[in-house]
Image 1 (cartoon, rainbow, N blue to C red):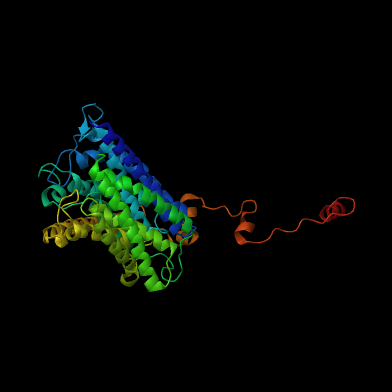
Image 2 (tube, rainbow, N blue to C red):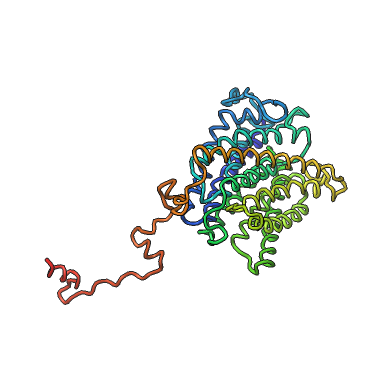
Length: 445
């Protein structure tokens, strides 16, 4: 056991945990004012729900043993036996690894929520998180990350596809499910007609900043030790994200004539998503190339929903599914044996073998996640209800689902300040020091 590695893994776990509140701010700022609380609640409640699932059964199904190369077993339910001092994972206590992987399990379903903003029942969302996490996330994470000298998960240990920190297990996985739910729940009332602009771009930037900060734990923490691999992935994460911002803003400038705040924030997230699977496989120069293309490609991809006719409210498909897929495939193109993953891609003379492995892994995960999410969504909608009624959606999901509003404009001076009106002039005083209003009241009395 190494104290430095343990400290780094625990600190990284805390950074990744911060990403989910960051996601709440990012998504919350992007929706209309009548949906912001519900949007943030969908992220925060995921923290509560998935934490319990992870401790009770999730860790065991993901990282305890192997069953058919697709799922773990029940030998460590309730984290049985993991409190002992001899319970070690690599150079850290197993519970440190448990805590770190828990944060990945939390944010993955939370990402899906952005696709169904404004129109999902809160109870339906909670049931979906439980079902999708059990049926999709746990087996996919096992298939990708449980390594046991050829006896582990089929994607990471048999196929040898690379997913350093979650491009396949997190982003493609969540993005495919987001597409399924967007189709199941249908379009928002007024989609393509009403503007539906973000109500608070400062919240969007705050959320993007917290995500960028926390992502260093997401990627560099996945090294599971404080060493060269962590340093390389840390630098690659920063470089690719910066390049993606530039790539997205260039496309915005060329297509719309303006570089926007929302575009900057979205470009940053696109870069973070794309570098996630490949941060241990590329050089910093490769990360720049990857980031530039990721920003540009995702900027184009977010417009596909209008052409294909599905209402992905906050562009989960365009950023996470497309960005995660591109970042994963880029390993087969830009991978360098000089990087920690030690695999040469096509552009480094390694042939197309790794590219094929990456494609197979992401295709299978995407199809599986989409299928289960679609079925789950349909079942929930037909039973307890998943889509809001038309009246509730028009009124606003914050009021109908939570009996709250994000901003109290009717409190003292709030409405006046919100509308930009001037306060009424003070009543004029008479010669004896009373006001005209008080004298009139006296006459009435």
